[in-house]
Length: 446
Image (tube, rainbow, N blue to C red; front, side):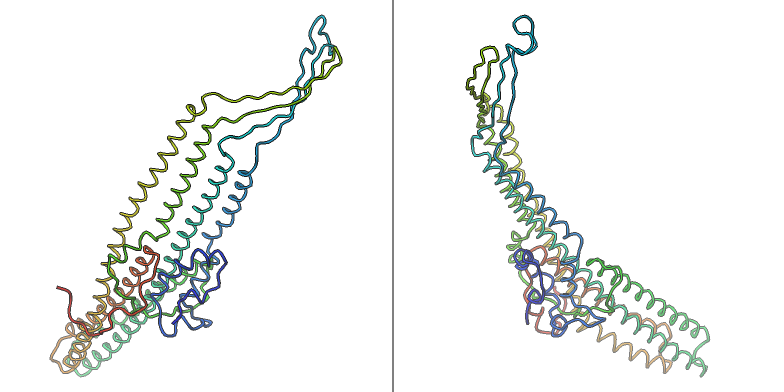
């Protein structure tokens, strides 16, 4: 089965910077035989299609080309050499006595500039280059965050679809219960009050179905908003809500955390601070200002060549504060990286164990709890029709089954969501194999 990223058509930048990380995370939660390999129909959308549209149309990624253009402008400025200046100087003009008017004037035209010392130009270019690398890392983080949000909203729609189907089943059960109660009331085996209660329960089931349908409508709008659409162009999403990736040891997952683009940002920031530190150190080397020109003495009608240079004194001492600031900022980045790693460890630990708990719950509900409740409902309904159980027993059995199925949907959605969070934190997918090949449930962990 092909990974989803091979089915997408992205820009050259995306193929270079996102394919190896971003595409390999939450998408693989939904690998199933037909959904992701089939082209979406007019009313159905796949996760691959949702990701493709979001990456190409989401406004949050559209700002990066402008940021790259801004850096290009800075790069052009950084590579400029010091400008040449033309100066004009007039002396002994407009005085008194022999210096009245311009007869005794001395006029000088000079060309001047600065000789940069300490490779300042190269250091400026290095800073801009590392800013571009930092922007690349930020774009990866934004793309990964967008993919995570697409996956989470996709899971929400997938779970909402299952909740709508369950609500339809609940409405059908409500109507069936009403029919059974009416039949018993007609035979004089149950009071009319139970008919009213059954009617009320059937109407409440219809209201619950309507509420789930409205929630599904909203969630589809929220999903389509990620690619800038206010009107969903699909009726449903494809996917298997009850298929999970393989369970991977926590230590192996945490070993991959350093590959997270959020950590790579600190690496890029550290390199940028190194470049800024080098630039600050270059300021300790004093630049040499020079000038050369021609002077004309009006009184003698003679001309002479003039030249000069100057340089500031004690530049290294005056620049010591800037160097210290740049060094402190670099060390601050290293400290912030350690804080981020600790935070990612906490997030990964929470997502890892919550995912495991959700999968255990789904397995227990699917293999042990729901089958038992289904059989209990069949037996309770039969006993109620024979008059052995009361109406409350019958309704309780029905509600317990519906509640268990609702819990199963919620647990499955939680497992997929936590799996997506794990992949976003590690910037790598979980394995493609289904979680737990043995479908028999051996009981909750002791």
